[in-house]
Length: 265
Image 1 (spheres, rainbow, N blue to C red):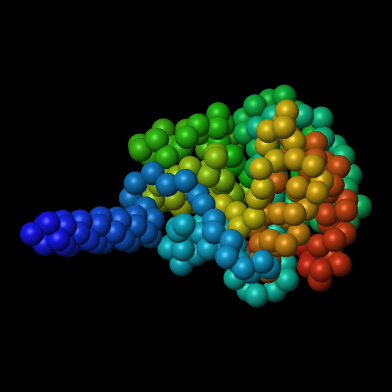
Image 2: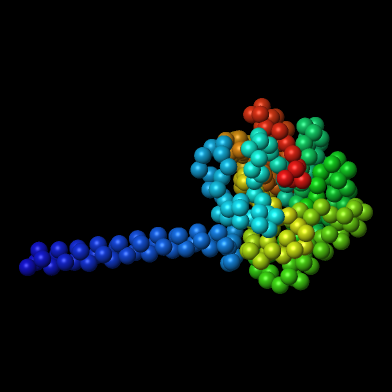
């Protein structure tokens, strides 16, 4: 009798566990489908499965392209598209520009309004040396929480107007969501405003100014994970990036990579 009860208990527990596991699988699949349509708030994310190969984004390239949005170029060429994000100037951009000039590499700097206000001469130098300045919004909010087109538009247009005031030029309509936070309506809004949205296929934790990675830590991510068509995100506020950039570009070139700016896409 005791054995029979134990057996029944075991069977019931097994069934319960099976339902729990099945439920987890269904939830995971449902989450994946949400990411394919991403009607809800999404944080941009990557999964690196094989060194030297394009990582998988949590939203597919095919879906992004519907809204003129990209995280990698898919030509198969050994090309790197280098980008820098900057919410403020931390004293390293002049050196970064010197290194880029030395290597004849053109990049896109995604800036916020504060940068235009406080560093107009550096912005002018970026443009004069053939780089592109992209729109990282005026105040760097969580754009995924902005539902109305008018509010979304204001963040981008205010940046456009300040850029023209500083440089006398029209802004190239390249947009990068702050912190990679977005939803489908954001991409629709940007597309309707004539923008291309750019995420990234390679980045590393370089943005904590008081906790900078070592050169070895940086290279352990940036060398083995580089891949054809990579859109690389670095922060120009990073002391480490400023110190390693010359050697990093040299190493990537030795690996057979060339450099093109985002307008090549």
